[in-house]
Figure 1 (cartoon, one colour):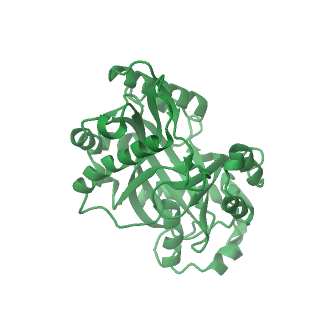
Figure 2 (tube, rainbow, N blue to C red):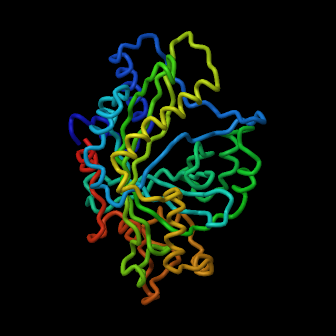
Length: 370
């Protein structure tokens, strides 16, 4: 942790982290000379039929290696004069993600947890906590639907539908509700280390008086070669893919205290901001961007399929995502030695710490992209 990254002191206290981050964001708005402005969350998107949808306004690019993104922040600041980074907004996450829906599913299901060291623990061991369950529309289309809830620590295996209904109510579309009811299967895993930070974008002609809040992140990630993270002869590793992604997402906006909300103007400003960041990125990385139309979670599925993993194998494993919250499996044994139980935590840690494909530290990623 450095003095320039005070948010790194927050390990698992989300409330404190996001409260402090909000303060840094407010201070940045004042320093830019905007007084009397108030923060608003990204509004629900109202479609032509009047449905209120929870939309994820984001874009991303995938590159072969995180080293490709060296100096990213400086490049963006120079290319976009009205994009100002929020001082002290740097956050770091490490997390595993499980793909819970197959390639033919209408949406994508995922389980994700954050990953932390215990105090004074060997830093090559990380333990998953805070399990979340999410449903998204597929691919990397514009403004995808996204619904996500945190699973209670004492009952990570409970049906998530009541939690989603409680949070989203009438805004939870029927097709999403019915999809959640279908049984989930773990198809594969990904380990991610994320360096995240925030920026404020303004543009009088396109956004009027609004200041758009942009959350940006650089992810270095490894995709498991098998659903249970065991060794794959085809990949000659338990890791099949190592890439990096830069993602930018709209978190909300600031507006003058007396500004009257207008759905269309807010969404026009959001979409303009997404494209304003996209344009210079295409110039910077035109020869590096990998033409991938899948989300990271979907890439787990296609990666496993490319290695010949069959649905029958996935069905036979019958993995449950909360099993990876455990250190030792309660009922799984090693194929070559049935007397030994599977160390699930050890397998999960390989996604982060396998020597040949070790993910860099979060501080290192932040230093790289300065």
